Image (cartoon, rainbow, N blue to C red; front, side, top):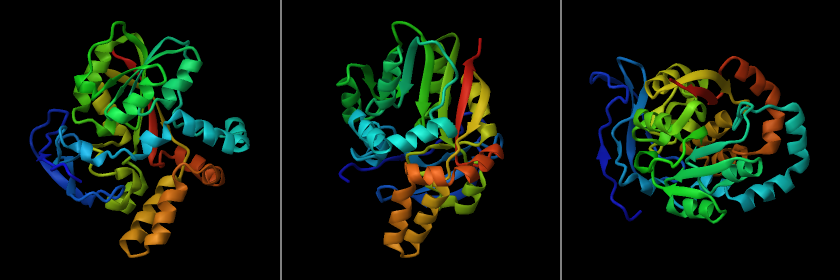
Length: 316
């Protein structure tokens, strides 16, 4: 890693008085890039965040070009996986509602995807008749999305220019937890949205038993790129502060995270190969998703899966 990492102390984005309790200390377990980071909980509102954290100017070191979402959203790779798992996907569509990138029923209009990566989701929505635009932090991933013919701003939401026309739908799949200023970003998105517009986001669910059990080995923790760590309650609170009213919270019906978390535990105890297998095999595995679905359905009904998709409406 050539870039020198600069750290900054982060205040609670809710504007609370200074005062936190330490939740855990962790490291980067995805790319093994050096650094130790604290997760703290605001004593006033309960929102958890990473502090100190890499500055906006230097956090890019923790997003190498082989970062999973950049590769997984490439249209070529999506099409390859679709052909490879075509029969499983057909069964999943009929029997399983995983509630990952799920959306309410909407007529096509203007859509913005924040954190669009290489453009795979935008491409799917464009085929359904949506006029799509994106915002992406990675220059390489943003260029891949632009190569598909879509308008994409390279950089964060904070630096993105206002659109020429407001949006009917704004989506962000596993993005809000990455933002340095989540409330500011949500307010900006509010200003870009039409009256009655929909916001659909997904974030890790730190209110689950998985987080309490695995702590700094919890797979969705992903320090230091995850800067805010949401529970259902604190997600509602932050969205409200940003000008959005939550309509539904869907707990995703997948159980890959505890298996991947167990892989991190085993890696830490010296079982490198077995741990790597569990971390890599479970993430995105169609077969494991299908086999674990009955248990995942129950866990979802209890609000105890590690990821949640939230629908919200623009507050007027």
